[in-house]
Image (tube, helix red, strand yellow):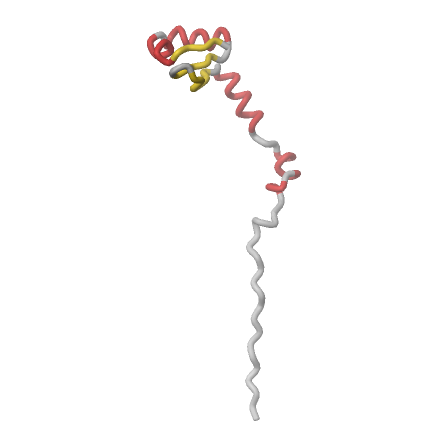
Length: 85
C-alpha cells in the first residue's frame, strides 16, 4: 500500500485516484500519522458485503432472539368485589 501525505493527495488527486485503481488501496497521512485510506469501489463493496451478517448469523446470534421484541406482559389486576351485607 502506497502512502501519500495529505498535501500530495490533494495536489495530485488524479494521480492519487489512478494509483488506487491500478495498485489498490492508498494510505493518506496527516503530519506523519495515518489518517485515511482510498480503496477501489469493488473492494469497498466486497468489504461492505462481508461486514453485513447473513440471516443465518442473525438468527443464531443473541440479536436474533425475539425476547426483547415483545413488550413485557402486565400483571392483571383483579377487581375487588363489593360485599353487601
